[in-house]
Length: 180
Image (cartoon, rainbow, N blue to C red; front, side, top):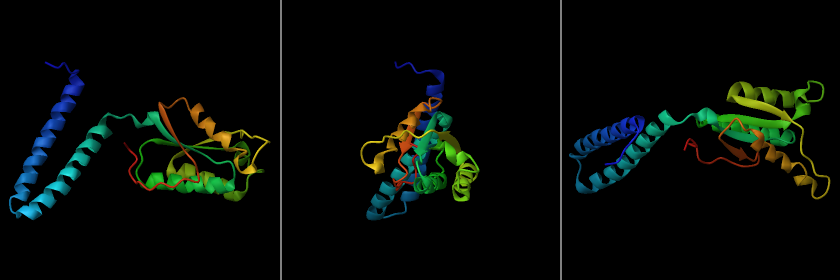
């Protein structure tokens, strides 16, 4: 016989119970449908039930404070893009922490434009973003476009997290649910 720790055994039993219970409901609802309707119904309903069970089981056992989405903004344009990406993560009800790495000079009222300050406050206040000012890592040689892109490596200095997903600010999020 397989030996399960008590907590895993409870989770397994709960999942099995939910699966059997939801299957009974599905079969009862499908009894009134003809065979073509029943086939389509089962396909969509089973996919929905499996997804719901997966999300339910996962959301109860994950400590989301151990995970973070990190973005870096090396200039005002990338700062704007990063805030838009954080808005998208906020809309998707992403549960992992959000961290923004940005130039230290944006923290100073005198050096930063009011527009930069507004974007930083918006990220912090509306989208629950943790702001981390950093000194940019810059390379003098090579293409100016990429000269500060090494700053993204500072995402891996966020050692308080078990896992970090570093998103470039010029990326686009299409999938709404990233809580997997």
